[in-house]
Image (cartoon, rainbow, N blue to C red; front, side):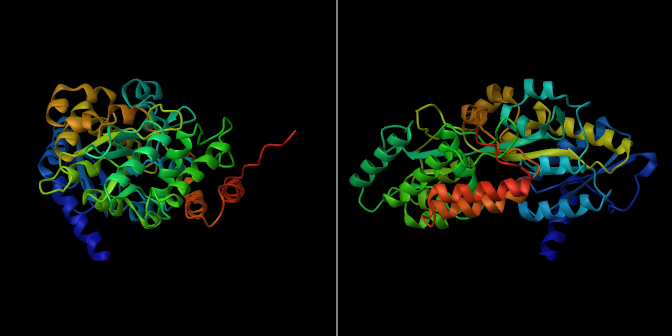
Length: 426
């Protein structure tokens, strides 16, 4: 891992045109800022040009870029350790959608409300990403690019995308009967964060919410019980394979892309793989919002990354960092990341952009799903409670515990970790 980190840092320096170590001061009296991010992958030239544009517009700033390992867990651990230690060797950081509340509550990322007022974000950006970065009426990060859970289906095996859970079950059953040996619905059932995303999508699809009006994480609810029973029922009834309890994104994708499944829940990245030359299902795949209990379009889990500012750096560096974030989250930058790196824009207007609709029609088609995307519980304790959610959700989906028992256990543990008290029963 040490060698990998050195290699990725070197790549990051090459992309950003860095010429000196992170310990040197800015030259010529310029303010020096460091941008820590995970590699975008692909041709580095368009991203390098974005950074060069910022440097031209800000001759008083010396910009350095440094890359981190392309692993969310490793990046989180790096920032956790560095920010807790009040490190000042980087200014702008890329944060996963579930990190921002944690970092904001700890005072590790700067309040950006003056430069990015919440009301302006709500006018210009998709609602889900804004909900993930605005807390108590203050802005602590700005959405950079976004992701959402969606449903893939075989257009040659089913009449259309199912709108309800009952239709999903019926279409799956019919397709499996007509195509011997094919599996039904594959999704992410392994005990990890992907399972949590799938469960919350089912909770929302059954009419549930992530948080109460008082901010309490809601688990012991009827929609949550129905959601876990639904997911377990897919496996118990043979509509999802038993092996789905060991599936992550790639395991699901491989089964679906090899033509061995009717439906798949996954992220948009799987589309390009399915349509690649040589793919057995090329031209036979549709994509739609997830189904729900009552048939309205489903709410996919919000994914993606945000840009934040290290709260420990000087005011001058904060101002330069805020200008970099404004540049990298501009409509023009959104377009570059979409066209060259297939990163879904967080700005709503981009989905009606003629160039994007012409050159990346798939990204433009995600508008409805992204407008309805919801974040996992927005709480500073999310990383603390994630293990509890994964463990109890997994036990219920696999049939090791009933949904009622798993949710009661989860609620008790989560309330303890967040310091919440259950409401009194009158």
